[in-house]
Image (cartoon, rainbow over all chains, first blue to last red; front, side, top):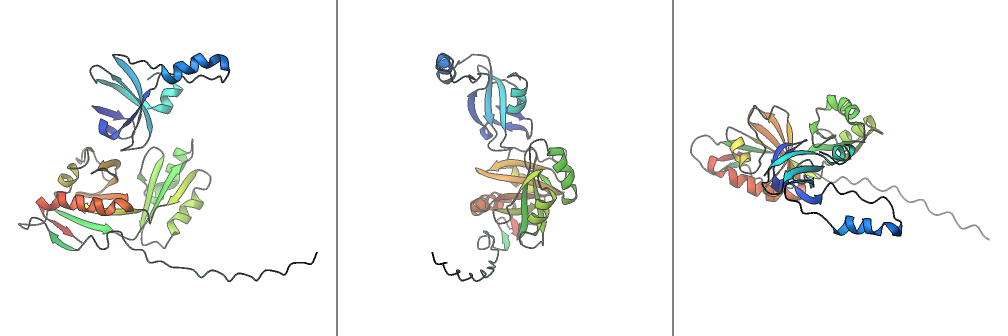
Length: 93
Length: 195
């Protein structure tokens, strides 16, 4: 799997460390009433077939946090943006 | 209460000068090694001692830092991050110069003792590097002066093209010996000189 790092160019997947789903939103409230949201956020992760946005750390290169969009069934890579740009775009790549 | 007697003044600590020792001093033996037919394909040179400073721009200061670094020929080392290297400067001189020039817009740290730069050159330099890195080193892709961060043999390497067939490889001091053993082994089939 080749990943188009926005800083380093195309690099092999071995240089990256993956963290998990980038599309989930951390609850903003600490109110006990929001515990269901927290439970969802911490434990109930989707395991979709198809397009998936995932955090990736380019540990073997620029050391930046990125978001890689790929197809979990075919490993086709759709794109890669910095985690900062991803967050600024409201969680869309 | 009686006044306590003034403490005796501590004598000024004598300035200790430690000689810089390359971590490859006992490892990089000069001479010719490996295949011994024809001219050696690769030449290695340990660049020591060097002044090596990392510069990391503060948030939103990337272009200001890039502009301020132009006279220092910075090497790209990540987003808004640079290495500045120099030869023949005194201990800490380059660091102090950059620290004051970039005050408030960048974090500057002296890595002169922390990293080692190995220069690899020769017609087979690319062939040796290609055994370890996925970075495309073809002249069309890797222009003169271009830098890349990569890994070779599990060691983080900062690579810069410095000549037609010459590259500088900057590695952490603690990995230098292991890296040296690996890269010289890769060069054996071409024959190599250590200068």
